[in-house]
Amino acid sequence: MTVTISPVVLRKVATNEAIDAELRDAIEQQQLFDWVLHWQPALYERLKALAAARVSPDNWPQSAHWNWVAKLNEIKDLLAHQTLCVVCEGMTQGLMRVDTVGKRCRLDSQKGLNLVYIDYLEVAPWNWDGPYFDPPRYRGIGTILLRAAIEIRLAEGFKGRIGLHSLPQSTTFYERCGLANRGPDAAYQSRLPYFEMTPEQVQAFLNRGSGK
Figure 1 (cartoon, rainbow, N blue to C red):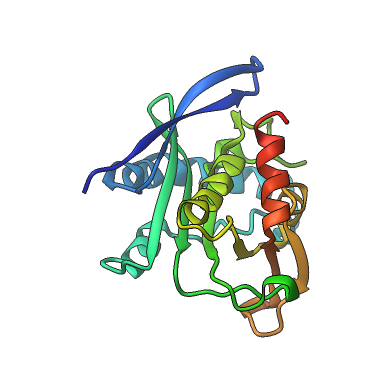
Figure 2: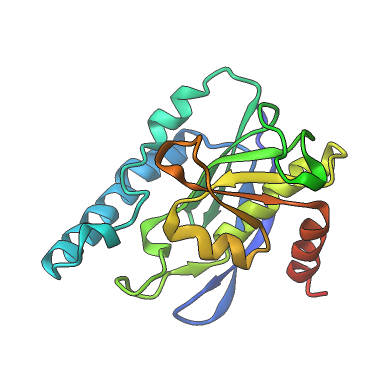
């Protein structure tokens, strides 16, 4: 398998400088090594710090239980799924898994049309933002991955439509990116809120990202 590598730029928070990075259209063994050997120890240290500070488990990272090795095994040899990642300064900074054929739009204006469904999107623990964490190392990872999901549909002529269920802690990010929040999904596990993006919202997001 040939992996396509596209240049992207992240923002290093400590210095506010632009740092060259790579968007890759596959999660390979090296990304899983990074997840096991670097993400997991960093996650453990952050959870330990939260426990020591007596922060309620309700405010702990809601993706802490995700297992990316298992998530890739679930879709092994399934052509309907695609994985992407962001790598910067030799380390995996973000991971995403999408379903490219199995979901349909729900918004009335585009109901029944094909979309790219984002199964999972996560950034490395050192890039988390929030009141209980130090400033993130890099910014821009989630936006780059979201744009990549949109571009999958643009390339296929489907106007960039995407959809996803969001963890409650991530809803502000997706709303800020312009996705329509349809509220808790009664048919989905844990009634997570469902988000979708229309072609108009897609264009607004892309224009903003390009500086327009």
